[in-house]
Structure formats: C-alpha cells, structure tokens
Length: 116
Image (tube, rainbow, N blue to C red; front, side, top):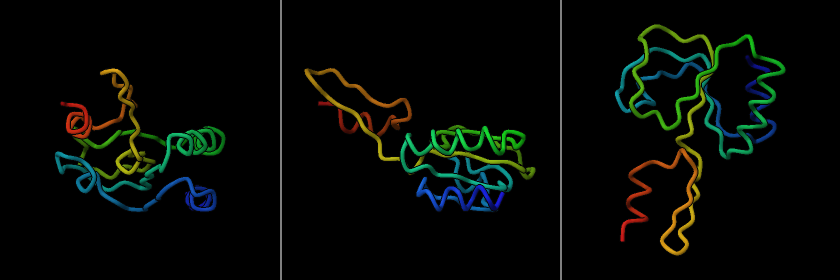
C-alpha cells in the first residue's frame, strides 16, 4: 500500500491518509478504521489513480463514497481503499436557466447557487 501512497503523492493526484475512520468522514458519524483514504483533487486525477489501481491493486477492496452522505459503515476495520470526493472543486454552468453540473455536486451547494 505504501507504493500506492507514493504514487498518489508523486503525481499530485490528491490527498492520501492512512488509518482514518469512517466516522470522521461520513454524515452519520459511524464506522471503523479505513486502511487507506484517498481524496482526489480532480476527476481527471481520480481516473489516473483508478487506472493505476486496476493494474496494481485490483485485489484490494475499493469503495467510492462520494461526499460521505448517508453512509452506514461497519464498526469493523476496512482493509482496503476508500475514495471520497469531498475535496473536489465542483463545477457547474448556468446558461439560459439550464444548469449543467457534475453528479457529485452537493445538493446544498447546488441549491444555494441556482435558486433565484
């Protein structure tokens, strides 16, 4: 796993943390320890990470939790990789009252910027 940590850091793919807890990253504040937590900084960097994961670590469990909302995680340790999109800059456009947004745009941010 340390090789994966170095790969993420060397290629500036985002933030990587070891031995974090689900209860610290989910809205329900429940869950056990995570072996490796990855916060991609862009969707493109997540794709680079994911392709590397498929080649080198596809025998390791991988969970993608979006922003961590409504996740009910076990209190048991998770010996795998969790990807959380909380720290990605969200992009959307508003043209002629039509909004185009990424699927992971948080509902509150969407409403606060688009309700006129």
